[in-house]
Amino acid sequence: MKQNLAGLSNVNVELTSRCNKNCWMCGRRKIEGSDKAIKYGDMDFNLVKKIAEQLPSNIIVQFHRDGESLLYPNLGKAIGLFNKQITNVVTNGKLLLEKFDEIVGNLDTMAISVFEGDTEQEEQYEIIKKFLAQKKDKKPFANIKLVGNVNPEKYQRLGVLVIKRLIHNPLGSFGYKKKEPIIPEVGVCLDFLRHLCINRQGEISVCVRFNLEGAGVIGDANKDSLLKVWNSPKRLKWLELHKQGKREQIPLCKKCQYWGVPNG
Image 1 (cartoon, rainbow, N blue to C red):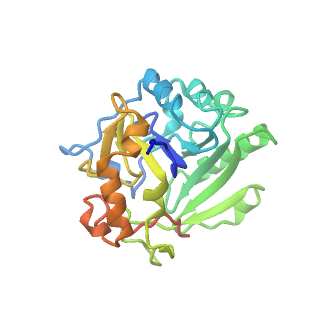
Image 2: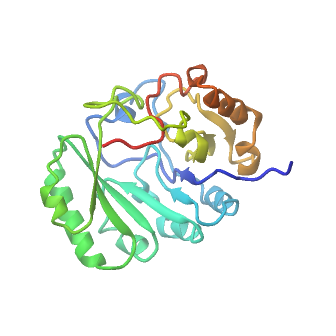
Image 3: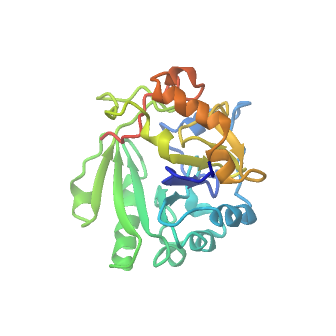
């Protein structure tokens, strides 16, 4: 049977692993200085182009993983390579005004993350307000993502969609506060079924979950085609385990409590 990318609907392309914020609940920050620390840097632009050339139209492409996408030096050009896909950035918003011309009219959608207990929350709010006022009705369609216990009132007055998310353990998608994650009726992780994540070095993982040991890596975008990786024996074996209700036998999935359904 001819191989294809059937089922793939979302790809994360990590433009940079660098970040300009120090969030108290961030697992990346908690391992700095250890032998497991993230090697900060940017994705080679030629690799970004190579990935863009392989993707089908109208799937979602998000430009984040462990870093702050807006730090990427060629942000506007990178976004423009994916003009046949639905592009998205999840950002802390610090560079919204500085990168305004690279974002507005270019990116399709954007989520601005607001965290419980953030000491820069008021400064962030002013940046968001100015950005939205300058952007007016031009794309990207923006929403505010409130993570943890954040009062939504002033964000609702901005006239954009406000969504809520739970805080979980900084070292992975487990230990959620307040409520248990939602499990879909099919009993299979929806994220695994439809997702690939490519870090800035080109390592391809089955999802965007925080992955200290590289346990979810199934390929290398520098030398493997996405078609080959999506249909690889390793991924298909893991797919069968998910279908059999045996996700605990998969290294990355065994302690993960997320099932591909965001929970607010």
